[in-house]
Length: 314
Image 1 (cartoon, one colour):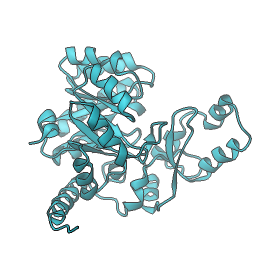
Image 2 (image 1 turned 120 degrees about the vertical axis):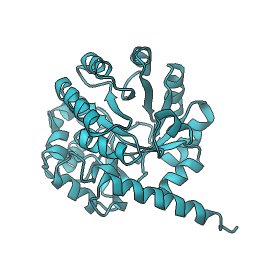
Image 3 (image 1 turned 60 degrees about the horizontal axis):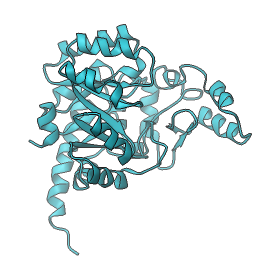
């Protein structure tokens, strides 16, 4: 066992990212049943919907699972109350100050992990008392850091600063990527985009099919004035770029974004006007598979790459 498998009591140090509109109980339970740690994405759920998914996940798996909570979303107090009431034992927090909820969660027997995009925020999270850190590089999909630090440089920088377990995220979808992250100092990996294109993902089939068609250069980080997000270059993305040419105010960008744009794209399958969040690694995703197949492929690839590297010559 390594630090991550020991911390979460799981077989493999693979965590499924708690992605909005992708990470319902079906995906979380499938990942947990396959030996990883599944996360329910609370960011796209009303409190009563979250409670339902937690209850269904408990019935679908006897293995550990968790909930990812973006702290910038509304209803945060009710969400945290539900997490505790339903006996969730693992919570990943993001997009907010870890000091706000870490002590409350830990007092209620919850293992807390916080997602960061820099070593500065990693230290703040460690000081807040979290049990582990997810360091997410610029390559990642969804909401991202403003610093544009890539995973290759972020992981060793964070590793140098903290003493608690470290999980790498951003641009990891294969066993080779997992091995590389662990060589750089990570104890485990968080995988988002690869699981978005899984059979159990709650995303619309249109979005899943668009993921497997993504090629190098087909995504871009944008909307930094609001919350940096990596998008597939569709019509909505181009509308954003056209607006930037006019030097818009923040209010004008908010108006263009409107409401429920991510739901429209990823959950409802509007590939034209929807917000399609995915990581750069989508260029290596060519097929929609089950969560169990994805994990097994990663482990086989990891072991093969680890054996292969012993034959390197300089």
